[in-house]
Length: 315
Image (cartoon, rainbow, N blue to C red):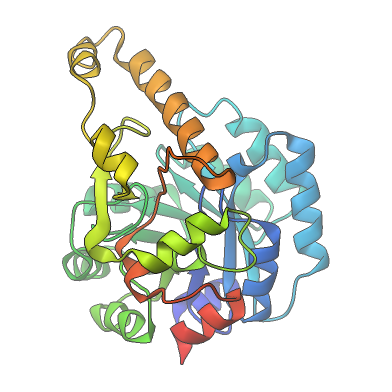
């Protein structure tokens, strides 16, 4: 399983444990590295820069050959912590950074000064070419089966289009829950995969047992797209609470979103309320169950150790 991704990050297997808001943590990434894959955590999972530094130091102390660790950065203007987080990641030292939701130009420029690889989330050829021209080391092709904020294009079409049109490695995100899924993405031309949802139901994840069990009890058919978390379509498990509240924005939000002057403020309020709801559902027992996940939970049959989940992907 020697690919451009394993070479880029010095991995044993071409798999990235995807960064998941509120779910990913250092325990999960350390176990991922021990298994010979890469692990990534959203920088926004840490409230302060000191907490982010402590996480980096812990991962550095537990780094093993054949594994790698990185952090995900939201690089648009809505993330007021972005510049400080980027500075910490560069100065403290990480293996790679995954960028999302914005231009990665500054991240690429600064990270490369420190020898840090930058991989960019993209959903189509236009953005893939853009980040390649900016100097990205690889792209993550987010397809329409990804969990969270997914793309609109199917895996096969997206991977094959990107592979034929750009000259940097293409990593597939979405729809991988077992070895046959991984093989399918590689057959399309991907150099590796980014896998998130199957790791929610891991013993090492710091979320409620109810959230983990939901990933066991529900399947691909139970995943729906909602506009009521961040203002951007996001995949969640269709729990009774989600069915009750609906998945579309309210009529008021719909009206306000048509006003160019206040649209961004409406989105910021929706994002704040939505993130609070998902945080409560992930960390507390509550009837307001808004659990983010993707269709790949179809293959999640029990709560397992990270090592066992990785074994299911490579064996």
